[in-house]
Amino acid sequence: MIYETPHDWIRSRSRRVLLFGMSGLGKTYLSSMLRERGAFFHYSVDYRIGTRYMGEFIADNFKREAMKVPLLRELLMSDSIHVASNITFHNLAPLSTYLGKPGDPSRGGLPFGEYADRQAQHRDAEMRAMTDTVRFIERAETLYGYENFVCDTSGSICEILDPEDPDDPILSILSNHLLMIWIEGSEAHTAELVRRFDRAPKPMYYQPEFLSDAWETYRAETGLEEDAVDPDAFVRWTYARALAHRQPRYAAMARWGITVSAEEVAAVRDPEDFEALVAEALARRG
Image (tube, rainbow, N blue to C red; front, side):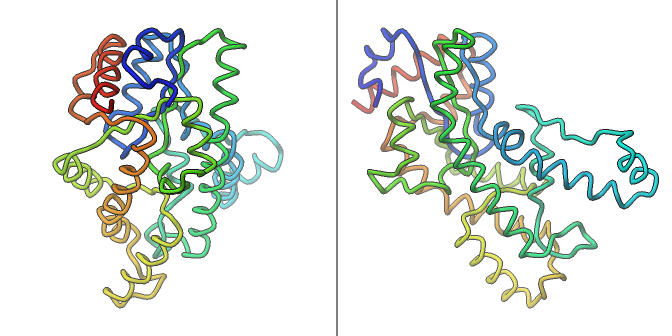
């Protein structure tokens, strides 16, 4: 690790950290606070995915829908209007909408083959965005003068790498340049995330093998044909299983860095609190 002890961390000229864990446990909260109050460059992986690597896919999907409306089709064909997404660090809806959900097209579902293709696009985009991190560390310092850097990862980071492989190329690169910090949720947090997802199910990325198995199992249990599956019902059914699938992968990733609890993160109010939390976690690990 680039900081082995609390002393290394506290005395370092620059603080470079990577936050990972389930979505909804505080990664973006911490990153935004550090950006606004701690002079950190905030690198959002989801933002990078949605703008640099999937922005054209997203915009083309909007245009495809707009072309179905005669008035909008005419305006698009004459270059009279411009269609683009407005992704921000706190609004990733265009990316989620593009990923979509499989199932009944009358309920907004996608054919499973098309859905799987979009999942593959996301996987490729996320791998590229993660390996871009080092370039942004250099860019943040040389172009903007930021010595401190926080990488705000996607919840699906554990799906695109092998944390059990000591030579995993993505983890090797990241751990050589940043302190890996797992925000670990409790069973209560997991239950709340499931309840929140049940109220408003959202598209997400799944590992291909996990997704294929979930799709086949769900259809076998329900007896439904592909185009009869309720998209929201499928992703609700899948979500808790996805969290259980990811938990041991996050835990294995944590061996590359340190662990803090979601409760500890919730108590962080300023950069000084964050500095103390990391120092304490390093001491625990040591």
